[in-house]
Length: 479
Image 1 (cartoon, rainbow, N blue to C red):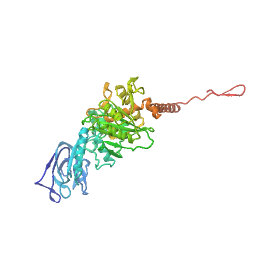
Image 2: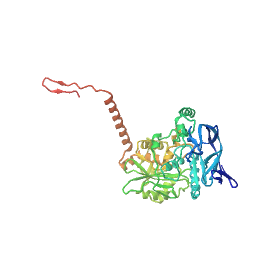
Image 3: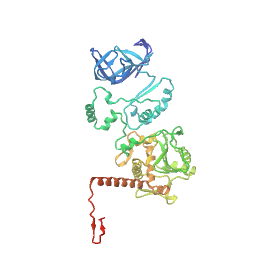
Image 4: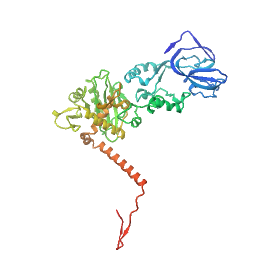
């Protein structure tokens, strides 16, 4: 909460000064006691001035340290309470507080708390509408505070800030920055929370996905999104790699109603060589199913007439028919409607087929298993942020298989498992002369062989072979 000030001034080291108002927020408070018996209470992120005239945070105070001309004798936590912080004190941002020189908050803009817990669709719309207004000022700022919650929008903000790809500056407060917290406190807190993973997220500011994800945690942490080289169609299409002459591409499509709920998505993959690479990604929940084919055909055509696989559930059938019959895009996958041993068949007559694939539990199960193999064996490179973010909350849900966690999306993931399913089909292997699953299986066998041979050759001394010389002087050695 912000209380605007128009009538009052505040005492500073150089006299009374104007200030914009008071920022009111609940924070953790510490009590500092000095050798002369005096006491000072402030928040852990409150700035105080040392004897050397520089400012430092209260959370870093140590016994024996000087604050102005006083020496600290003890520091202790003193609860959580609402505090009032002056904003934009004139001429240096310094003011007097209980006889000490403090440094005020210097902001004009927004302070957002628990940003990681804002639902993704609300967060995207909010930042899209608000950020241009905030960034137009010369001294306006946005402060975003949160503990992590998966690989979502806050993770993206944080990563870009760490890599210097945005105007934000990353700053973390770890559990050991709070006076009185030691390893014994850490062990006790882990026990109370029930797991080390929960402690890492809540107190160690570590990003984790949901539990029970399709892709293991180690692989998820290793996935790194890229900033697109270009964006098209109102920034809904991200281009990570431009088309390369003579390269082969596959586009997988998952449609939607276009009414602001589920997203219409597609991914384009370079399948020329292993590992396969996601080179473009599209995501929009407002595009009409009748307009979506225009975007699909134009993009697929640009990528050397990419092989097009459209999921027919929901609006997919309408999209596929427009791509084939109205736009005449010939490189559309026609997939048989009957299943045999879990395989949806290519080939047969047109009467037995349809442009696209009608997915089932079996199709999705095969696709998810293949996607897991591709990613965990480094046979597929993902570049799109939303694809990686959705994978971090794509979890097992009993008999229904894998799906998005509560209040999450999995529309980009659908394009991934569709592609992974396609790579298991004989039609795809014949077209690209690559059997990925066989290659992964052979690599695993080699690893097992090497591990076993290495273990037994170093762990046991093999008996020396007995040499026999017969009556004719011929030397015989047992095989």
